Length: 217
Image 1 (cartoon, helix red, strand yellow):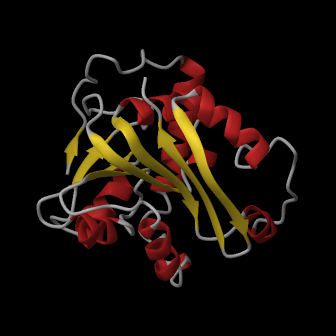
Image 2 (cartoon, rainbow, N blue to C red):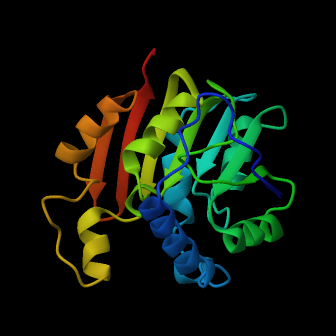
């Protein structure tokens, strides 16, 4: 595991103080929960496998797990791209990356990085997998634009959660609201504005999956 170097040319400018404060709160929240995170969701593996299959990865591809957490998806991504492919896992929380490194050593290159400022060159990736990420981004448009920057034209983005929006809201004792960013009417224009073409949307009790294709800049 290595910390991220300075962002390459083309990466966004440094975030403002409010953004940085929200990022720090996210880091603190997940840092305190990293060690026991996977034990809370022991049955999610098959849903992860099904979602990763939607990426259409081929041997030799390069793929990023954006907001990789404890690295649950990393072995599945490695199996899909084979020994000649490249797998990156990026997360802002050091404790999560520590768990990923301990659980899946040698599976991926781990980056301590904000998904809105990635230490990767332009068009470096064939695909991006992001499980449970978008709801925790302090700047969703910044991150989606940055993920577009590091993905080649025609590359694929999959936004995933192992349960749908309604089921997740019920789990947390909340109700869905019209301003939920993951709702298709809200997500579609955001993707379109940040370099992506929406290419599929599923929101059922047992899966949330939004798929998009990187358009030619």
